[in-house]
Image (cartoon, helix red, strand yellow):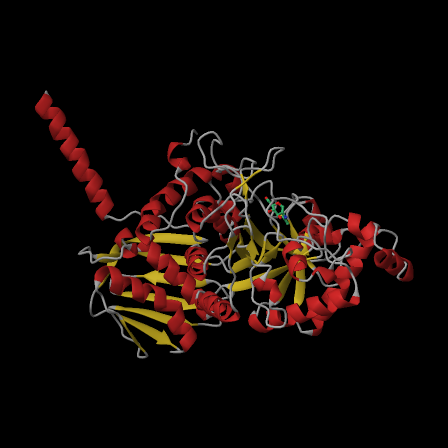
Length: 540
Ligand code: TNX
């Protein structure tokens, strides 16, 4: 009997290995159409990548995979500009592919062919190929596995044009290298926007040449709060800070571009401005003095809408616009208490002069003033949903964070919207039992809840729904002291956000997603990426 049991175990093990050899297909985000045809293509030292046309952007599109193959398999795959008929990955631009980010991937036994309208589409086909190769592709040492890809036909294109995550580097500073890794992870999941939150009460993180005190003073705080705000506050008495030089920023922008990611920089106004006011107190209503915030929360001292402030902000935005090619510049707009404006003689006189009924209209005046300037530079503003209060600036795009209401209202008014509701995609919230998780800001958004988010609200007509550009997850870092914890909070929920943004709504299936995502974990491990494993023990 014992022998029989042993025999059955061995048999089932060999069946398991056999089916593994057949190679599972676990793609995140799941492609729009996929048909597995049987057999496999094997990459070897003679495989070539043919690029037509052979341009720098096309080379960028294939660069990551070429590097990984060299690192993990010592395979040196050459790119050629001829059209080999076999043992090659043939990449062609084809204007007939309708979606600019879409691609067709055909894996046959002797040839892989890829077509896309743009190099970005080719890049996404390569992200798919990367997930189709054995997981050892992500490991930084030589493996003697066979580099096979299952034969299949994929036709793929994203559902939404805006798919992104935000990273707050103000509450806790992260290095340039951390930001590179954040970008790698976005690109791996076919996301195309990185919202970089660069200024806040607790730190100003971008060098501005005209105002050196912003980083000399504004980039450092003396101490940070331990735990959540409470009556008996405790401080760590450890200075915290850091900033990105303009040279760093250029490198990050270039790195993102190589990964077909646009960076949307955020410069907060009129609120969340304490670090800037600590450096230049004359930009406030009271004149200060202020110190860079050590607390978490919302603070009363905000930019005063006077000429010196507008000149300052326009100078800052000019330098920012020169550094970032993004169509959108994020101007914040959230959580700006109006108490200082209520008690400021200049603000009250300005309201009278401009016929503004209340301080919300004064904020709207502020944002419209800034919008005019940003538009004069050929860019557009995007702001948090508070910019609706007191009237939206004419061309503003709204990022809806306090649920979806702001996004719905903006779309009804004919404005574009990025959905980022805290009810689904706030990846700073707990993702598992708070009793056993590291301290977080609060909330409860397990993976299934984030995955269940549908960005097109039924309250909108199909015409209005066209204003929903896509979605974004936000990673605020009050309770995220380092990058390892940032990765832990961002994934796997970031992967769910990526799939919502990319895959057809009809393909949404949590059980299926979960199984594919768990299969990706060993790939994350190979890259040294941290993530939360809570779904391994999640109850159905
Ligand atoms: C609200 S979301 C904020 C941030 C905080 C976050 C914490 C938004 C536009 N503002 O300043 O960090 O809550 O979840």
